[in-house]
Length: 435
Image (tube, rainbow, N blue to C red; front, side):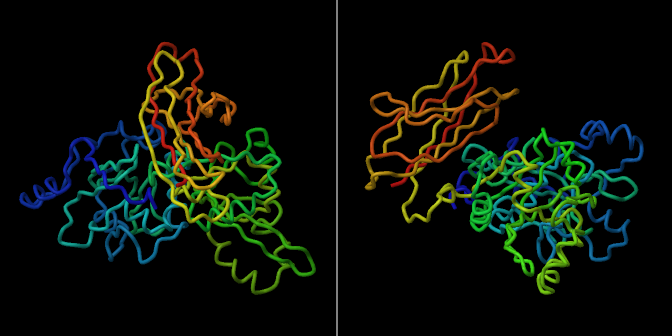
């Protein structure tokens, strides 16, 4: 995949992993990160208010000792599973949802967390590195392993397995972790939702959704949560006895607190007793995992707002298999004093087909408050052949176009807002053309 491997790696804050680790080794000390020092101000307001004076910062070995875990800490267990990741006190279900979906992809995890680091080797010096994606580059971020605890228990994002210590917007978090292409699909009048989810999951894409704000009350009555993200695990079709096939979406609540969907085909629904014994037995272990549940696809359309997808590879956005490659062109541009950005040419003359794919991804950069933006595409005669529609204040917008052979101009669009008058906004544009 184009995104999983990145040849460009930059040191965040100019911290060099090898040099700092060697310094710790020569001085026989554990690393303490000067760029992220232990301080109560790093904690959330809620944590400081509720746990003031109780918080202690410990390294993983000390935490394991306090909890009586003889094996000691591990970066990864024998096998990673989505249910291993549990949200702590920070309201970051969006990050947990993205990580939950990506943890099954070994290539992504190895790129995000280099494998040459652990707690069990002679090379342990309390320093760890993680690589996050931003604008076609990986930024290597170094941290020490001092963690906030109360009564010996981790209080933020943690592993469900006690000695495993790996671990906004779900879509934005997924892009930052893997560098993929984001896409949002409204669920209204969407007839092939099950097909989309099933196929995209096979491609390794990250999928999730949140409760429609207009259905918050009805959803909460059925066990769903407002202002929350549910990562999708898979799509399944089952056939109850003497009945038609039912299309189910299997998902997880990052909180893992036992609250979950109680409607049709929920874990306690009697409809499961109308399936054969093998089907019930295959799902029995999943029902025991807190926050994991099934919903019929038609109920998902009824309660959720839009499907959010992060494609690890742009070719996965294709509705049909294609052997043709995608050529990437990317550029940085500016909206100056709220004017539209400069045109960008899509040269598709190298394509040998009448229609070919073009994937466009436009992202705002360094915006304290996101502007409303989108893009349109004109052909050589300045006739508009595509528009992203209503301008939206997302961080990044993407779509797949089908174009005939020729040259086109892509024009980013940005709407003036009261809070962003007279500012210069920058954008990052990626264009993938089928060749």
